[in-house]
Length: 122
Image 1 (tube, one colour):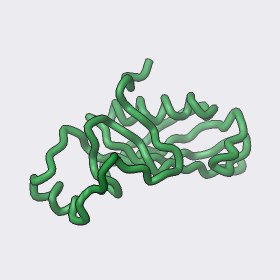
Image 2: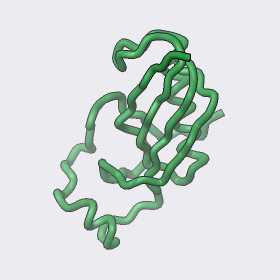
Image 3: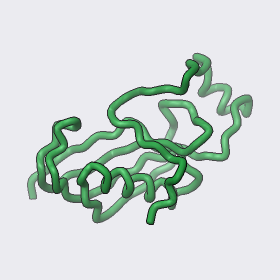
Image 4: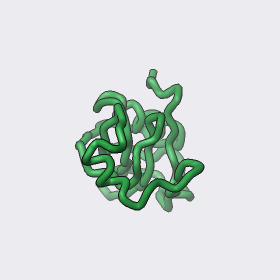
């Protein structure tokens, strides 16, 4: 069971918190002016779309799901990918996790964003 009680996945939006982050948030994060207990990861999940995903322009069949996440560790990043996959009808068989540079600043809770699906033929 995923440990995502306070986590959110943001579907195809660049939704931000109630206030806009400073323009130089990446520099502030790098030099310790913004602190977070989270790390930034990109997950690439391989699996099967079991229900069409019109919001993501993806039909049923084999696909990859990419997702950027702020999470405590790689285990939580995997849990977030699996939880989102279950929520939208994507049966995940394998998840790869990479520590990457963020495109959005951290928040008070773990969250995912920039979710995309890429289908392929076997």
